[in-house]
Image (cartoon, rainbow, N blue to C red):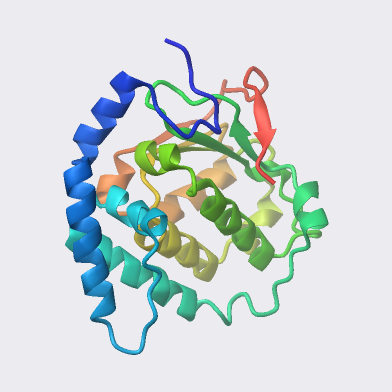
Amino acid sequence: MKYLPYDATTLNASLSQKINEELNESEESKSQCLQQLREKLLDLKGFEPNLDEEFLLRFLRVAKFNTSKAFARLQDYHKVQDKYVDFFKNCSLPVAKARKQRFLWILTQRPQDGSLVLISEMGKVDHSKLSVEEMAYLPLIIGETLLKNPSTQKCGMSVIVDASGFQYRNVFHYTPKIIHFYFEVVLKALPIRLASYHVVNMPSIASSLINFCLGFVPKKTQESYFCISKGWQLEPFARKNSS
């Protein structure tokens, strides 16, 4: 099977059929659910909604075209934005600084399930040069950009966290507030389909942090979580800097 490139905006026929069946997506369901979702949004008082089809389809796809679930996530999406305005009010991340970061990568090809593979190398985060606010802000901006691709909306993302090189001193930067923020945004608000979440090359100190983080994750999501402590390397994979 020929692997799709990371930036592919269309899927091959067999994968497209499989994903559409899984998501309950058809021209009829798209038309019907978009209309229902727009009506729900227009009924909200004191709120000017984004009714753009491309934007709304993100939420319908992650909800498998269940309009009520899509509407609830859209509400959470806007609530989280309002809630964390203060969190990011002093955060300024110039493009030049973002491009210098070398801990977030995208594989240049998608696996057979069509998901986009995002790699985070925890041990390469330099907290003396990147604040915790900037560290949280960067993946959000990247995520919003990646979700513009309909293939990523449909097939989701597979996240690989490489914990090799993680230092004890870095634990103190991952406060409960930061962890809660990350999982509240990713799991409840952003319209991301999580295909899988892997943590590899995990030293004992990172193990304690990851186990603590899992306390914020629903059991259903934990079923897609994998942990490998040794023997896994990033070098064989072609990577593209996500910045």
